Length: 332
Image (cartoon, rainbow, N blue to C red; front, top):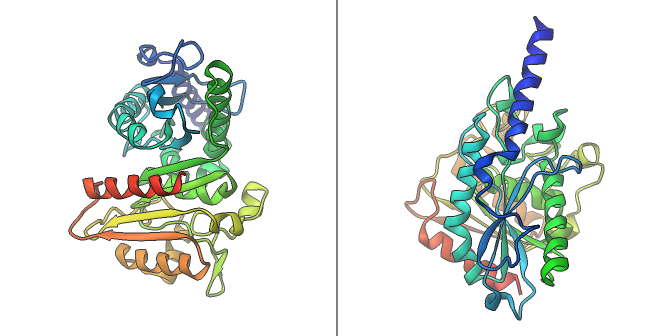
């Protein structure tokens, strides 16, 4: 029975991976084949010959907008809000979000908008691998297609930069900016901690009840990823780069009525990490927000924390305006 269960689980994962070449993405032109990238949404196809198993979407602003600029890649991780084995649906959601967000962001900021199309599988315990949040399971899973999505994203950035430069002479900034809300905010925050040397600015909205602590331990307790940075060396082969992390301007925001907490759920955190967060920082999500700010201040992190009165789990116009102003200031 266990053998059949394992084989069936592998088939499910293979089925999910096979959606990467979905016909429903074909109406979006490939970045590698279009004549001009300006003012349109394009696609970087999946390439399993590299470390990158999933496609990405790219929106490049008008030529006039970036003619005299060195644009920064703004990475906005995809987030569907639920687990599913329907990759076509996830891709359509990423496309919908990109079309809604990218034109405004790229016209107000000197950026090239990039988003992932990462799956968030459902069946056979794969729902525990919270891909859209870059959780601990993503860092430890043996499923190649779902593993180390941070490295898959970096591979995509490098490919996109190379194509833009070689085909159209668009030189991009060596560093990137990251931005996300909810699970995508968790991804953005954790990516920034994992790779601070390549991040220029970071915007993190309501990151699931707990932003990763810059400390490796607190009150004598080890804070392992994604609670903190205590096991980076064992987990990713390099220690946490606190000095680089300190140099990054970061903007954290949340609504005062936001109760969207991922800490109590097993796809968000392992039981041991749940208990650690509760014991050290409290069970109330809003209380933890205050405690997290204290931790960032304790290590002199260049972080601004904002709470918006009367706002639940959503991005308001004011939040968006403040995030854009923050990026305008810090992407120069």
